[in-house]
Amino acid sequence: MSNPKTGGQLVVDMLRSFGVEYVFGVVGGQTLAITDAIIDTPGIEVVHTRHENAAAVMMDAYGRLTGKPAACISTTGPGATNLLTGIGGAYRDSSPGFVLTCNNNGENIHKDDAQNADHVELIKPLVKYSRLVAHASSIKQAMEEAYVNALTGNPGPVHLDFARDTIEGEVANPPSVPETHPSRDWVGERPSANPVALARVAERVLAAERPVIWLGNGGNRARASDDVLALADALGIPVVTTFNGIGSVPTTHPRVFGAVSRMGTALSGQVLGDADLVLALGNSLNAVSTGRWKRALPEVIQVDVDPAMIGRYYSEVTQGVVSDLGSFARDLVTAVGDRAEAARQGRAEWLASLSKARTVWWQGSEVRDPDAEGALSPADIVRTLREVAPDDTLLIPDAGNPGVWSFLWEITRPNSYIKPVGFGNMGFALPSAIAASLIDPRRPVLALIGDGSLGMSLGELETLARVGGNVCVVVLNDSSYGNIRQEQELHFNGRTVGVDFGPVDYGMAARAMGVGGEVVTSLSKLRQGVADAFAAGEPVLFDVPIDRDVNAWTFPSFVAPRKG
Image (cartoon, rainbow, N blue to C red; front, side, top):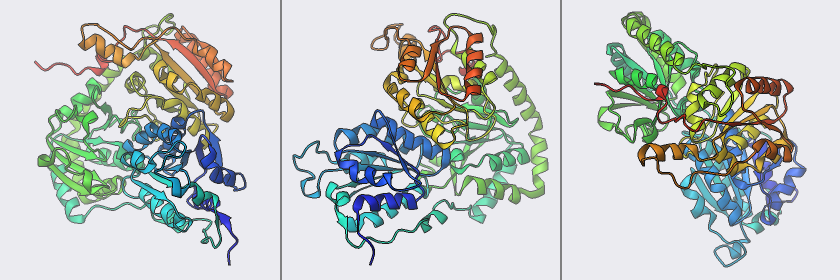
């Protein structure tokens, strides 16, 4: 007969069995049966944040960077609703994690108790799985089902809402919980391509004159960089990514030509525009990638682990293959065999012309004055940061203009870039940098964040000071919601509303919360300051005023040339 334990302890035991190391959140009365149990449980810890949204974002970032789930936790009502935005980011960008909400006593749920809210109905649209757990006997099975949902197929967050008396009450005969849950052995397995489908694709790829691999976020989730690049090299196929696929392959590889998105780059748009066949690998062909489905595409071969994503858009020109991207790429090289050489040679002249275009494209954003002072160009800032940041730096741009300017950041290795795309949730970069520092305190992390996004997550500077890490925060400060202001200026005759702020010294704000910080108004001082910060390995913030006249919407490197 097993020893009794609380439902909260059983929840924690299950989390540890699944390999969960961190529970991020803001504790409250309803959460205490879980968070108190963590104190005495080795291998798992609570990291408390200043706001629940940051906790959900940290769960998201941990999932993106490791492929494993962390958890976020909140109390009932406003605690749970504060999680929603960060949960949505994880869901839309396919990041696994446990969302744990703690409700009132089971008999009082849906009654007028304190902070009452229907967490399942609120959170269900933004997760893969959502369930109320109102009986202790259901805890183990509910958590097992949730874990399998989070990690299989297209990964994502899952939600469990625990009645307070379920986790506070004693479980007289609790089920045994294995040290390492057996589900961990198989949930990461992915399907391989059907041989008949693979043979069909091989013939079509060999027949194409200008095939292009358009790699999506599935490339990040599958960790398929080496296999995709081997396919590109074997058959002479250029690679572009979606906005969400940035980081899935190094941009320094000779076959990689940048990202195509709503803005994209002139270079990547040219590559995709030349294609007579698109291999959409882990690419949902969503609105951000396709200009809300206005982009004309030739024949598409779409490869995804989720059959429901294939042919959802562009169905009439799409052939589908259900497969893991890595195994698909390996198997396609094998299927093509010794015919690859002729195909590669036939595309050599086209690839050479694209390589010349890439050289010209990079030259277009070179830093003209390395000692520039005053309000700096964000393009110059990003190119300068790349010069000085260590090779293995993890770049985390926030939503809005920082993400667009990050097109100018050379990615030298996969899994070194994360950004909120599908949900576009602001306030992402700072909490994500904290999560990254927990994973590896020594890895250099650069959070590129606008002052608008920082205003939404400013309190987490104290969390960063408390957690520590080799984190450099660079604020692109234009005293506004810059991306929206620039869009207003471009499309509404220069009229702006609701986008401008008063001056704020974020360096001083950082120092007040325990993080080194200063305002920097020259490229040379920024270059030296970032180098010194990464060498010291401690958190620091640089508040960099930027030139408001440098518009991401009209920046030449991002605007496709007109055909005429």
